Structure formats: structure tokens, C-alpha cells
Length: 387
Image (cartoon, rainbow, N blue to C red; front, side, top):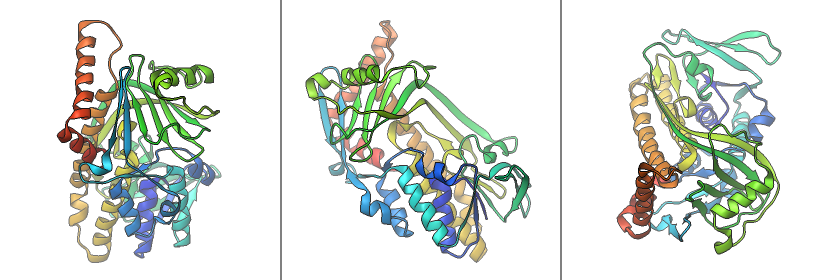
């Protein structure tokens, strides 16, 4: 078994397979240091935690993960909170930085006897419709090479070799939501004990705790804005304004240790199986970060694929592999729908024309319903935590 990519999808898949005695290698183009330090998502759904616990992969998050169950929505007029652990299915998130989870998964995989080839870039997947597909690679020293396996799992993201190797006829569903965020990692303690969503006339602002010393912020900006276009003072002043620091309390400021530009886009491929090649994680579907679904979908897909591969390789039963694409897409589209709803809830057009006024009035009505309707709150909680 050849797995492309050492992110959550590839590493969870690899760990489960190796634990079941199925030989596999993970090919990762980046260095181990880069993989274990790149800051990504940090909110793990209840189902994700159950998967990790089921396969002996939850030791780190049990010791260092922080339970979380509160959202705070802020507008220019007021604010309200939802304790979603008491709504819907009564589930909550666990805050655990993705780089910490990846570090745990790498350590566990290697301890179980798994093999990761860091610095090995997959170039193309060939003969996926045959018995022994081949992955052409560029080794760490620059020389060409190849790996063969009975199956290939493409967990190498939206720009990886798995997507580049798909046959004609693959359907791509793509949407650019026309919204751009500055993604900011601040060396500063959290400023509130909740996930903060601020819907402001100047644009969205978001606050998400990562650790007791590091906080993730998001700040809506004009599309095409470079990550370094705004000074730190301007960023903090804009966060203060949009999050109502004058009314609700100041934000804890600190140096910005990471910046990125996040264009909110959705991208889904169908089907997710092409012969012996299977897609998982961002290679299967890219989702906007507005609802924290990406890593959770990746872990769910990894377990579904691991179970299907086990049945095929150990019992000669291909039913799980045949159903893999349809089962994953059910979860992917449900997550896409909720993410799209969140984008509409938190962002509105900035113009003063009739259409802009109409859409912003709808947005205010949605927030009012979320604040006052128990049925709406239950729906939100179920979809916010669920995958």
C-alpha cells in the first residue's frame, strides 16, 4: 500500500493499516520538521476523537487537548453566546493544534514499524486501472524513483500528484465564495473563553484559541491583499474595532508569528475512486475553514478507507472499496452545505445598493434566529460539531 501525504488523512490511514499488519509506506514531499510544525486547524469533532481513541491514537490529545463548547457571536449592536454542548446531540469539540496531532501520528506510525519517506515528492500515479499501480517520485537527492503497491491512497492535497493523475471524466465541483481572510497566529493568550465570530460592516473577524499562549485570528480583507500588506498595529486596531473591544473588553496583543492569505473556496471531486487510486482529505474535497471541517473529514475518510482496504486485502471482500466514494461524499456534501451557510452568516456585501442591503438584512435575520430559536440552535450545534 502506498500512501501519498503525511497529513491527518495519510497518517491515520497508515497507522490503522500498520496496526492491522498491512504493509504500507507514506511518501511526503516535505521534511519531518516542516510537517510537525506547520500550524493548521485545531478543532477536533467528537466523532474524530472517537476514531482516534478507537485506534490508539489519542494519547496526546487526552493529555493536552482542551474541551471546548462555546461560541460567541458579535455584531456592531450586541453579542450572544451558545453553549452548543447542551444543544443538538450534546457534543463538543476538543482543541488540539493540528501540528501536535500530526507529531503524535508520525511518532506512533514509526513506533509501529511504519515507513515514512520524507523529502520524497510524488510526481504521478500510473496504471491505476491495473493490478500494480506505480507512483513515480523525485527522491530527496533529486533522483527519479518509483514505488508500487496494490493500492494507492492520494492524501496529498489539492495540488498533489493524486489529483494531477486523475483520468478524464472526473467531475470537479468548484466555488469561489469571493471572500478572503488574513490568517493570523498571535503569540498571545486567548482573549475570550469562546470561539469568537464578529460580523461587522467592515468585514468578518474571528478569534480561536489554540493554546494558553497562542491564539488564531482571522480578519477579512479585500481579495488579492498580500499577507504582509498590513502592519501589526493596523491588524490589531482592526481586530479591536470589529470585535468590539471598547464594549466587550480588550484583546490580548502579542507578536504575529504567522500570516497567511485564505481565499474561501470549495472544491469537491467525484468519484473518489479511480481503479486502485483512492482520494482522501483535501485531495478529495477542499472546504472553507469557516466551520472547521477539513481535518475532521480527513480523519473520517481515513478510517472508512482503512476498513475497506482491510476487508479487501484480508477477506477478499471489495464491497467497502466499491462503496467508499459514495459514503465519503455524503459526509463531504453535508459539511459543504453547513460551511456555505456559515459563510453567508458571517460575511455580507459592503455596498449600499439595494442588493447589498437585502443580503445584509437576511444575515441579521439569520443571526437573530440563531439567538432566539431553540430549533435553529439545535440544528447549528448538530452540524457545527458533526461530520
